[in-house]
Amino acid sequence: MLSSIIAKRIEYKRNRQEYLAKKREIPYGQFVDMVYKIQSNVKAPDSYTDEQMISDISQFSRQITLWGSSKVVNKWVEFREKSLNPAMAKDNLFILEEIMNEMRADLGLKKAKKGRLLAFFINDVRELLKTQTKQNKN
Image (cartoon, rainbow, N blue to C red; front, side, top):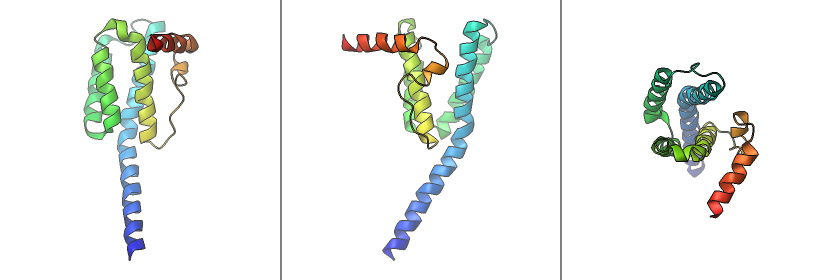
């Protein structure tokens, strides 16, 4: 009797995780697409307009309102708040990576080491990591 209750509980949790992962897959993918578009805009200005970015941000925000885990939502809010201060731009890169790592965890994947996901976008990520480490020590 007890073992069947435990088995049903485990099955319920697994089914819930699968359901949420399916619901999160699209908005999380849209977020990664948006990050890549922003990065490509650095190389080819005006390839991703402010209007397109605002639309993408709005759509992503609406989706994670319902489907984002609390960790993703909290990191997204932190990112948005810090994006108002241009001096926080480098810190925001690491928050972007933290958001992507939380998304990976939500989808059942292991988190990548710090800087690994940023290395897809930033050629000198090791220098950026060194700079942040020095700032955190001071």
